[in-house]
Length: 173
Image (cartoon, rainbow, N blue to C red; front, side, top):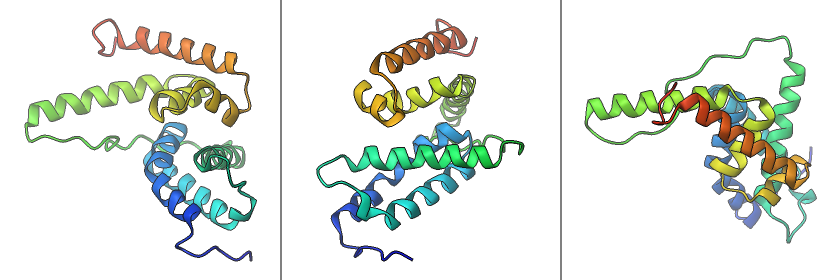
């Protein structure tokens, strides 16, 4: 087995700092938190074992997100006939003491989650990278191995589909 770098290594610390973002991204890809955590764990294992392949001077976050996406794709190929597990209601950490506001916010979050989940996978990937993780179009294009114009058109189609699904008031239509 390859030797892991020291825990105080800068790249290792950067990977640890990326965990919340990788988890959000994996949640969008997988559709549920349990599978997302599995993808992130496998991604981190691969990244830690292959840190020697990381090119200094390049963006570690792009490298890690690509590993996460490839891990998810590999898992999907292996489990093509397995049914996906269902949503977990705990998608977003909501704050506030007001029960009515909390219930409304939770319902809104579920509606948005359902609308995003209804998008084709190619559009979901772009939405996750550009809108959720705030990567630039160029960065998302590099991570997905797509022309930048394709990323832009997929995002445009996704936004239009989300607007149709959510309706003019931002609520599920």
